[in-house]
Each structure stands twice: as C-alpha cells, then as structure tokens.
Amino acid sequence: MEIIELLLDEENEEAGIDAISIVSSPAIESNFLAFKSQEIKFAKVDDEKRILMGAALIPNKPIYRKDEKKEYYVYFSADTVRKASELFFMNGNQNNTTLEHNMELNGLTVVESWIVEGEQDKSRMYGLDVPVGTWMVSMKVNNDEVWNDYVKEDKVKGFSIEGYFADKANIKASVEDVAEKEAEEKIEQIRNLFKKKSLN
Image (cartoon, rainbow, N blue to C red; front, side, top):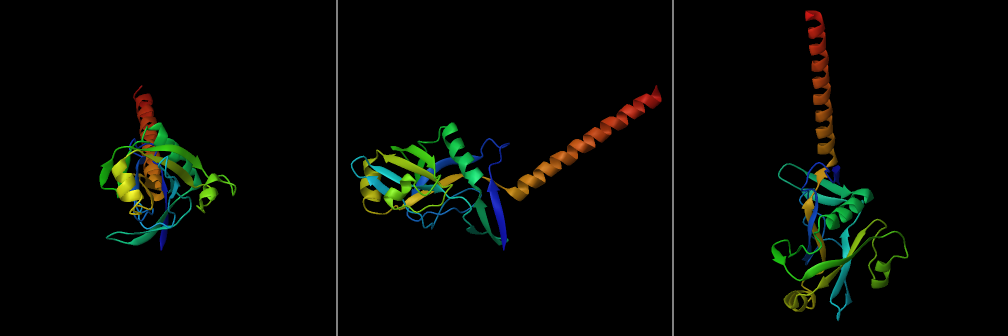
C-alpha cells in the first residue's frame, strides 16, 4: 500500500492549519484534515481554569486513507509538524475552533503551544504519552455550553486539526513541471538570440 508524505505547500496561501476542532474521536485523515479515531486524547488540566491539553499533530504517524480510487497511508514529518504549528500562530488562527468539524465555536483559544523535545516533557505530567516532535496545545474554554455539555460530559475527547496540505508527489511533479517550462523558455530565448545574430 502506498505511503504518502503530506507537506506544507509554501506557494499556496491557504496551506497550513486553519482551526483546531474538539471532537469525540480524533485522528489525522486527509489532505483537508479532519482528525477522527486517534488514540491520543486530551487531558483536563484544570477544571477551575477550564484548560484542555492534547496533541494537535503527531509526526511520522501513518494515517489510513481511502477514497474512490485507492487505499493508502499519509504521514507528516517532524519538520512539517513544526512548520505547521508556527504557521498556525503566524496566521493568527489561535481563536479558530470548531465542534466535530461542523460548528464554529466562540470562546475557545489556544493559549499554549510547544513541540515535544524529550522524555521529560510537560505532557507526561498529565499522562499523555506522545512521541518526540509532537505538536502539543493547551486550550482555554471560556464557553459555558461547551465546557458543561461537552467537556464535562465526556462527549469530546481530543483535538483534531483542519487545514490544507499537499502530498509530496504532487509538489515534486509541480516543481519538475516548472523546471521543465523554465528550461524550455531559456532554450527558446537562446534560439531567438541565434536567429537575431544570423539576421544581422
């Protein structure tokens, strides 16, 4: 079965993570990412402060995909995870949250973000066993309905990202197409120079 690396297409202004959703069953799923059925859950760090903590993106984790044409796996490198986490804040998306990727929510904000660097990571204090390179977030929930009806009732159990990524094969093909076009243009310019010389 094919395994495809997903990347940030830096030429595409829409690339990156637009929002973080709170979901009942999170996992990384497609080029437009909606995470469902991932093992990593979030922890209620502080009921009084209404803080949730969990993994937003895990590096090198094979994620099963199936579309009309084929079955395959996708994954993100540690470098892509880091870049995506940075771009999320650079684009000012820390207040963009949804419920189950369907309903936009107000009053939820990512207030802390870090990449797990080693075994002594803060996430271990809360029983979250994630690999090095994982993008962790803490989210403040200032929405009574979400906290009381979803978090306290255990209807949501983890984070799931929403965003746009490209697969490595498509980016490589696109780069090769551009390089080929540029080479053809240069050859045409050289031909035109020779034509002008011979006319002179």
